[in-house]
Image (cartoon, rainbow, N blue to C red; front, side):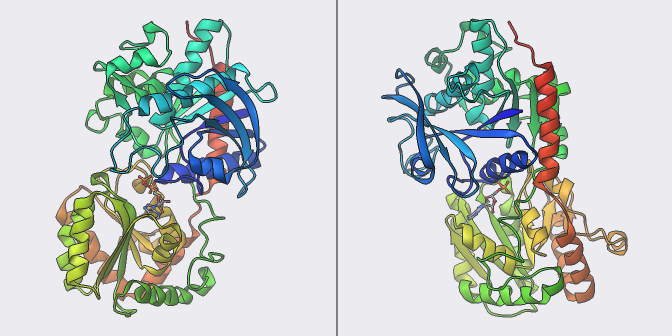
Length: 491
Ligand code: ADP
């Protein structure tokens, strides 16, 4: 089975969020199951620099406002994965964030940039690389949403069957909607701009393209797959999702244990595991020193490692901070994004330097030290498609405190008395995005933190959890086989 993943981010080369973790770990896990996997990405400067053994595969006349279009294949030196990248000067050779300019504004020509990504996926499916033609194209998030549409368009024009397709929604809120007139520039048949196509309230919608034209749709956790079918969680896409209801499923993300393993993590002060959990205290001390917090082992140390976005619900942490600090807690925030959230945390850190520390920016190694050194990781997200940092927290014995939604509901078991007794408790959950619900959970964590034996037992339960990419890859492979068998071109 040949599978082409189409995406914009791959860890460790380009990463702005969890998508990059998925698109590096899943292809590798699929490869281990015998699947022949390749990845297609835009030729952002980092991909061009990072990949090795690059070879030109094909060249096409310019379009989508690129000066030229050349597709290369290279190898990711970190894991040997084969990656196609599109060298399109004018479109992708821009430094910094893949989606936004230096003032953090979306590039106005993003529809052209990511249309080209989907368009090249279809060219590969048509056989432009004669040595490797995919059986299934797996498109990730709105940036790759046009890939399934271009596949259908090619089938329509060529009157032959091409690869089947899977579209994974990593976050339904990010849709890639553009003014309707953009449709005339992206080389799809006119009848694709309709209610059963890529048109969404007069706009061109990349995510709708993926949802309408892919053979199967997945989300990154089973609970999120159910949640998005409720109108209040569907970001206006309820009608589309209801149409595709029989083709939607949720496959839980896993943890890349080559990257996230406290027993072998070079980034942290001292490695530790289930049988050497006492060493975690040294990571805590080192982290408190590094961040200027008062060194004290008996204060519960909370952390946040996150995009600072409304979705992540961090305003509720700001509301609760006076009480958290009053109870003797400490907080470290590692995040970047919304400037008002950044400055709100910064102001508190300024007022309470021994208890609160904020580090704005993106720092992969620091994220390991923060997660290893903290006692509790906070994810009060308003909604959460899967969430990865709670999984990293579990592995590092840093108990997640989460709003029980989406992937957080699927992965964290509340430390109720019954669950502690049954040895299934792995963290703290609260229901409903309310201050009282959140703070109830925080107080519960404070109380348990003092009961050292029970805390340690919960840490052990957490560290034993197995959220593996192997399990996820098996489910994706079964889906690819289903798609491959049943894929039919649509007229
Ligand atoms: P999302 O994709 O919504 O941002 P996820 O929890 O799925 O959230 O994935 C976030 C990923 O980004 C995790 O790997 C997390 O460790 C990482 N991350 C988020 N913020 C930072 C940061 N400031 N520095 C380093 N890593 C971060």
